[in-house]
Structure formats: structure tokens, C-alpha cells
Image (cartoon, rainbow, N blue to C red; front, top):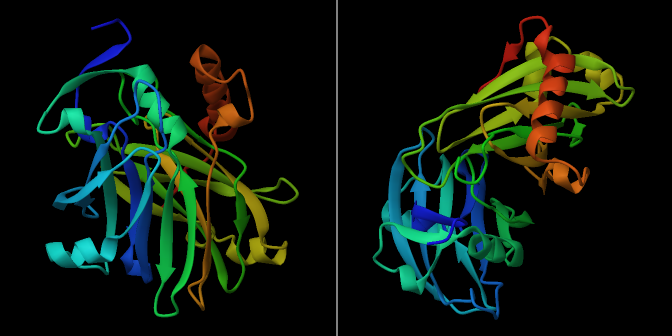
Length: 310
């Protein structure tokens, strides 16, 4: 084993696709899994399986889903698996697709290199679809997921939610699904995020905070936050357009942005890119310093924040 290998690694999280299931809002969820690494020393036939977790982070059930050859893509409707497992569709859940090389079959722990894990992550976008019922309109987003909240990969656990658009009106809300996950189902740490809502002129409409228990997803509704801050009507009157800045200093959360029509249920989805896409020097000590300075400027001397947990 080399110095760059990760020992005692759970192969179920070799290349996971972790996604929200929003049955409570009337959406069915499908996932398209891509075994994108076609050639090279790390290319492999992958075994696929699903795990579903409840709103409080408990495993509801698991099922095998076959195998996937290099270069191939397969699509699954999670509603079929939920029905097979007897899990209520109309719930808030997390789904996990485990994408595991066949050489790790039946193994509880393995040694694997960072280079191998990252090779698969960088080559394999997965696509998450939300199907609006009963109209059948589909929207979705593609993303990759590397190891989360594992000190063997990152010595700091932080999330900077920066620059995503906020649209709020009498019939529209902007919602962020925040996922707090890891590389083991034994992960037990709650993540906490502070956030600031500003309009198109840069005016702040107040600060809030949200807690996300381990292996769960929580909704951050901008509309609900503005209501609790008694600023909803003011924000809409100013145009209803703005942005949100969020900072977690104890968890690497996965944020998914959704603009939702409250009357029709139609949604537009996006993921929020990490700072490295904007700042090429982001990382290490610079990341720590920047997050501490952001906290000092926005949150440290603020008045008591409004708590939101949806």
C-alpha cells in the first residue's frame, strides 16, 4: 500500500451517486448512472446497488441493480425500487446508488488510491431527474460526487454556498436542498450553515441558519426564511431577485438549487459550483483563511439569526 492509498475504505462509497427524493413535493425521481471511464488501468465493470434513507437518516432498504460495462449508461426509476421494497413514495428521502468495481464484490473494506477514485469521479457525470406528477414534466441536473466529510481526503469540512440566484414572488420560491453525507453510514455529525439573503442592489435582508442531521436532506426555503425575518413583502416589492451566501464551517454539504412555481409545481434545478471553479488558487490554508474572513464579515457580529429547518 502506498502513501496515497486509503486503507479500510468502504467500497460502497467508491463512486456513489447521492441524491434527494422529494416525494413530499409531488416529484418522482429517476437517475442515469454513467460508467464513464472507458479505458486505462482503472476502467472496470461496475456492480450497482441502491440504498434509501429516511428523513431522519435511517436506512429504509437496499436492493441490487445489476452491473454496468465501461462506457455505458443506465437509467433507473426509483419509484420502481421503492414499490418493491414497500417504501412510501410520498416522503422525503435520500437515495444512494453504489457504483463498485466487481473486484470488490463481497468485501466490507478495501484499500484504494485517491487517483483511482478521482479518475472515476471526473469521468462520470450522473443525471438526476425529477418528474412532476401528474403532468409528467421532467427536469433535472447532472453532477459528480467525490468523497464527502471524510478527514482522510480533506482536513477541513466547509461549504461555501456562493452566488446562486434567488427568485421569490407571490407564486415562486427558491429552495435549496442541502445534503449532509459521507463515505460511511456510521457518519454521525450534524452540519450547520449560516446564510445571508441579499437583493439585486446588494442590500441584506437578514441572516439565517439551518442544521442538517447526518445522512439527511433539509430544504432551505428562501420564501420561508424571508417570512420569518418579516421581510418577504419588502423583498418582493424590490423586484424579488437576489442571491444567497451560505457558509458551513463544520460540514461539506451538497447544495442543490431549485426555483419552484408554487401553483403548478414546475421546477428548474441547478447545482452550485464550488469556489475552485471561480478561484483557481482556492484550497488549503487559503480556503481556511477566506472562510474565516467571510464569517467575520457576514456573521460573527450579527444579531441573533432566524433558524430555519424544513
